[in-house]
Image (cartoon, rainbow, N blue to C red; front, side, top):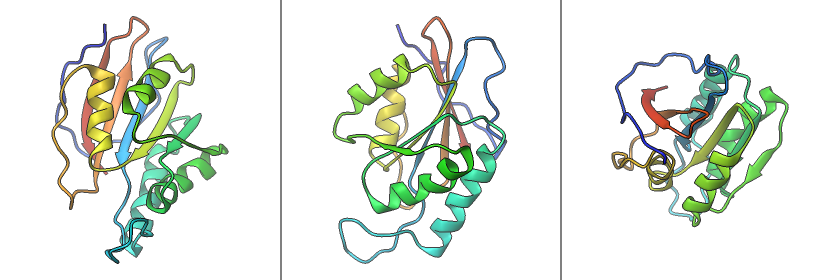
Length: 163
């Protein structure tokens, strides 16, 4: 039921709300740069804080209605500037249940949703949403943004961008 036209390249273009009637936008990103302190739950680096702010600026005109994050400092802190700008609370999801998250996102009614995850969960979520594999995310990659358009008929397509 959920297919994809696959990822297609892109630059760092803004992420506006979907233009077509009934379409919804899910933006999926990995958390920003984290401190390499060997802990299980590190904070963001200064560059990570700047990237989180850049994400909020990118999504400022998109009409974000919902922001989801796994329950880690680095993901919550990546999501926080966007949630604050949108005037919404961060909702915590279980990164061990990507199929359940995808099902909930596909059933959601909000037009624009941001999901902040990890290098392993973000591509997995995109694959669940679109029915197509997503390229693995290298550990040192923090700038990949998936713009997933979900049409009213259930067709979901992912576009890869950088921010």
